[in-house]
Amino acid sequence: MAGLDRAPLDGLELEFEIRGVGEPVLLMHAGVCADFFLPLMEEPALFEQYRLVRYHRAGYVGSTERAHIVGHSSSAMMALQLALDAPDAVQTLALLDAARPAPASEVQRAFVEEIVQPVLRTYREGDLARAVDSWMQGTCGPDYRSVLDHAVPRAFEQAVADADTFFGQELPAVQQWVFPRDEAERVTQPVLAVLGGRSQPIFRERWNLLLAWLPDVEPFILPDATHLLHAQDPGGMAAALSTFFARHPVSLG
Image 1 (spheres, rainbow, N blue to C red):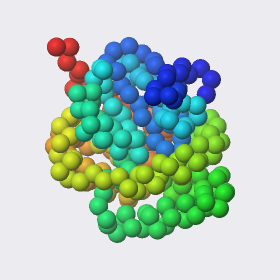
Image 2: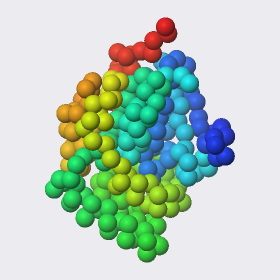
Image 3: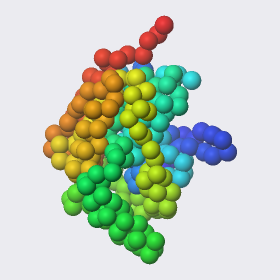
Image 4: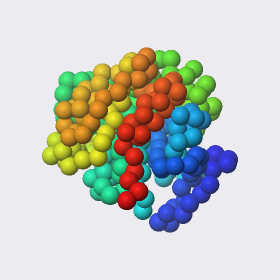
């Protein structure tokens, strides 16, 4: 995407954008749509108080200080793993409709059988646009396209271009990631567990698990939002994040 800076990292280049001043907030986008966080970058409640950093994860598009970490969907898993692997780099975690941290259950089984497996079959057949559309309908609802096109122009076309990264690499890895209760109890940073008021049952199940397992967690439901969350209501999401970050400032000492 034009206008983003580039940073070298271990032989790769990551595209990134920084806006605002203050304590750093790292925005980790979900799979499929690399620009999911564009709407939040435009919210004064955040950029007038915090230094927002969004980037394109490796494989998407062209892409020592403690920070507030915001992870959406599969990136919520990455945020949790970061808190385990590099706890000194993480001030707080905001986990938006987290993917995967749930043991085997009837809801999980139905999600895999009715959404994940058919979508992966479609992807392997080579119909990338239909695979993306089926995935987005299954996770975000049948009216996702109008919301997404309004909030992030050309997001669907970019998702199709990035489909190999998501369906060929990320989604299989998500299915293999393990996050048992004893590891959850090691995440001591303050956590905001976010759920869309109209998100699919699989996300509510995972949200309830995080509330039960994490030692310092508070719930937040974004009313009338699906898994698209901040693409549907960036103002509501920005206000909740800003309030949460303000309660847990980065220590200057």
